[in-house]
Length: 201
Image (cartoon, rainbow, N blue to C red; front, side, top):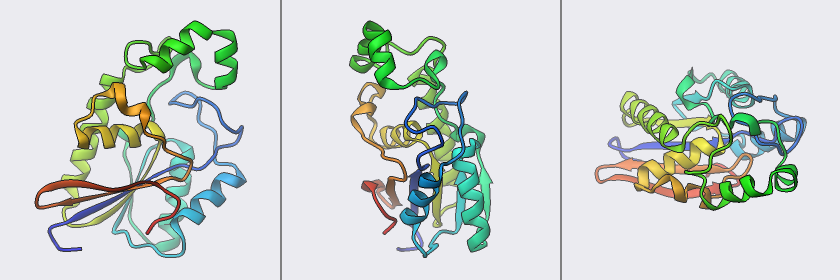
């Protein structure tokens, strides 16, 4: 890594208590025992970062704080890195939505830009919020290596922002629990080196 490069690792939180649910900003369960294990296995024993950044939601923040304390790394919590709000669907299970609200759920799957959950945040708003937050953090830590503990929606929005991809296409990117995405910012812009890796490399 040259001095001109800024390297960013995005890691999605592990599985929270309650298992697989639709969680945005309104439903925020802490990590389960499995979720903690997924996160520690993903980061391994090394701590190659200069700075840890985190969403303010507990399923991200608590691990970020533990990691930063363990390795004596600085931690900054950025409220703009919170997950997209999913409105009335927060806390719901996808099979239940498919059974109870089949038309609305299918419309969401076909076009998540136009057909948001009732009261949910617009993807265009997420795009603006996350794009601004990410560029602000990159500008604040030039030439450093960063770890951002965040969410699937936030990871997709960052990738979409860097690729210039429309929000309609973001859901084609699968982001697993504790999945790692690496982005390298060099002289000629950003390069996405991998998405959804099982371990920090």
